Image (cartoon, rainbow, N blue to C red; front, side, top):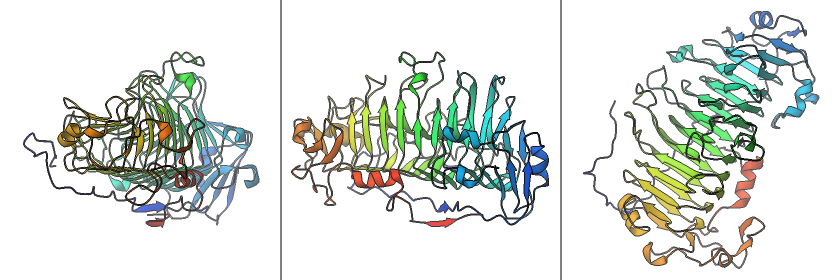
Length: 535
C-alpha cells in the first residue's frame, strides 16, 4: 500500500485552484416499512424469545409482549430468503410515534424490554444474518451487570464481506445503559446495508475507556443514521477506532442526518449537576476511517476537555493498531448543522502521525452555525478549525461562527486546496495562525499557499495582514444582525454583508436552509443519488 506523506521538499506555492468537491454517498437506503407476508409469532411474557427467532421464516412477524422483560443474550441467525423478519412490540402502531418521528423514553410503557445480564450483547446479529427489522423495543443492561461491551452487536470481527450481517433496520428503539454502570457501546455497527432510525440511545459511558452510542470499524456500509438521539461519553458516533479484520475495508456511504448528539452536564466534573462518576469524555462525532459521508441537519451539543482536548468534530484519520495502512478520511460533506457549547470546533488531520495511512482529502464544511466555541467555559482551545498534517481540498464556506480562540490554527504540514469563503466570525487575537508564523498572510502563504480566502467577515480583525476582498467591521454591532443579543444571527436588510458573497448570497449561514435540514422539511432531504433497500 502506498502511503502519501508530507515531504519538506514539496513546494509551498502553486496556482490558485478551487478545492475538489467531495463525493456524496453513492447509496441512500430506503427504510419504508415492509408489508409482512407470513405468520405472526406471539411471544408471551414468559415465552421463549430465542425459539421464536429460530423458527421464524422470512416474511414473519415476532411480537413481544408490551411491558414484559426478556432476559438473555439473544442472537439473530442467517436465514434463506430476502423478505423481512420483523421483531416488534405487541402494542398497536398507534401507541408508537409514527415512522419518521423519534421515539423517546416516554414510550417505554408500551415497549417490551430485552435485557442482558452480563457483558455480552442483549441482541447480536450472527455471521450472514440479514433482513431483520426491529421495531418498538427497549434494549438495556441489568443493574447487576458490572460492564456490558455492546447492547446490540451488528457484526463483529468477520474476516470477509460474505460473513458480514446486512440488510438490518433498527426502527424506533430505546437503547440505554444505566446511570452508574459501564456500557461501552449502544450499537456495534460492523454490518452492511444497515439503518438506525427514529431511536433514542443514551447512558453509554465507561470509566477509563472510550464509549460510543454507535461505533463501527469492520462494516462496509452503506449506513443510514437518521433522526436519533445519541448520548455517549467518549465519541457519540465514531467510524474507525479499531483496525478492520477485512482487508482494505473503509466504512462507506454514510448518511448521518437529523440526529441530536449530546452529552449531559451531569457527566462534567465541577458542574453543579455532576453525578460523581468520571466518565471518559472525548468528542461528539469522529471519523478515523470513512469515506463518502453526508452529515446534515444535526445538532451537536456539549463537549469539554476531559479525556481529550475538547474538540467536538474530528476528521482524524487513524490506522489505529498499525495493521490498516489503507485507512482514510475522504469525501466528507458537513452541511446545515449546529455545533454549540463546546471547547473546540473541528480538528482535522491529513495523515496518521502514529502509523502509515492514506491522505485525507475532499472535506466540505458549509452552511453551519458554530455557536459558543468557548475555550474558557468548556476548558478547550476555543479554536474553530484546527489543521494538522494537512488535509487537502478542504472547503469552509457560508458558516456563521462564534469562537473565543483562533479562527484557524495550523501545524506540522501545509494543506493544498483550501477554500475559505463567505464565512462570518470574530477575528479575536490571532485569527488565522500557524505554528511559528504570524497571523494572516504569513500563515496563509506558509500553510495554505494558493488558497482562496475571500468575502469573509472577520469582526475586529486587522485588514492589512489578510488578502484583499474580505471585510473587517470593528464590532458585531457593525455587522447588522437581526438581533445579535437575542441570538438571531440572520443579516438584516440593511447589513452591508447581505447578498455580498461571491454567489450573491448573504455572508455567513443561510438559516432557512439550516432549519429545513434540521426539521427534515422539503429541501432538507438528500435526493442526489440512488436510493435502494437491499443488496
